[in-house]
Amino acid sequence: MPPAREPTNKRNLALVIPAHDEELVLAGTILSALSAGAQLQDIYVVDDASHDETRRVASSLLDASNIITVPWSGKAKAIRQAITQFDIPNRYEWMHIADADGHFGPGYFPCLTSKLDSKYAAATGHVQSLRGGWVSKYRVLEYTIGLEIIRRIQAFFGVIAVIPGPSSVFRTDILTHLDFATGTLTEDMDLTFQIHRKHLGPILYIPQAKTFTQDPKDFHDYYRQLTRWYRGNFQVMRRHRIGRHGQRLDAYVSYVLLEQLILMGELIILPFTIWWSQNFSVVFVLFLSNLALLFCLTVWAAILNRRPDILAAFPLFCLLQAVNIYVFMKAWYEVGLRGRFETVEPGWATAGRRYVDTIARPLAR
Image (spheres, rainbow, N blue to C red):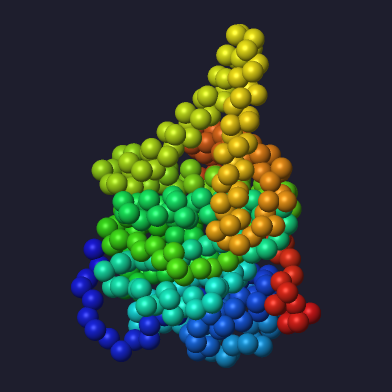
């Protein structure tokens, strides 16, 4: 447990943006932060050996003292170097980490800071998808279910399992207790588990603070991202020995995993049961039931987010649902059963898949 905190004259919140080859989107993120209430002097960029104009884009908006370039490190280690070189713990009460492709809703930072309380170790806001292709439209549905329902349940029981990259806020006095060199594919999930395991304090969910993220532009990128996420999830579960501790986090994650494994078992057994009974109407009924539920949830998400455009992509949602299940099963076999991907070289999962943002375009040329 970190030592008791004393009143200080530190500034409230630092915004740290790690970036690698992000010239297409970085300007849009910085401009969005400013319009959402962040102070220019509190925005910092750590450029992780970019090959493009990332540093130049940052320099066109920020003071040189707020930008550093580090040797190739990977996202997590780049953040750690930024914390040290910008002296964040001694200068700020809170540190906000944001992805370089993020955008912030109106009044995001005043809303966020007004609800931050020192009894919490970390906090996160509400993440939603930026407008994009059919993958982004599907993500609107996923994020709405995940944050409007599941995240609220997690917050109520104190079992938030992931502080997502677009909206990660940490009390600075716990930073020395966190190992940013996680060696996993999902460092945001690993850091969240560390907070639970080290009893650093509860995690606050602030649904009113809305931020937006850029999702994969096509199916290939979606599949790659999903594979990384699921592999990383199982890496984190193995690393933190989920189910072998007595924390509420263990009970919650074990329940979710068991639920998914039961679903996998049903999907494997069901075809054989139908073939044996020759009752193919079961498939038809199950498919229509799932389709009806999915459509109702899609309409709800469209109304809640004022995004009627996602209804046009609904026919493809069942396909992505099936892909999700397949990738989950594949990652469970690879990492959960066979223990592969035990070590991970530093890298950036977003490299090469960015597309030009309308706000950033003038500065990305």
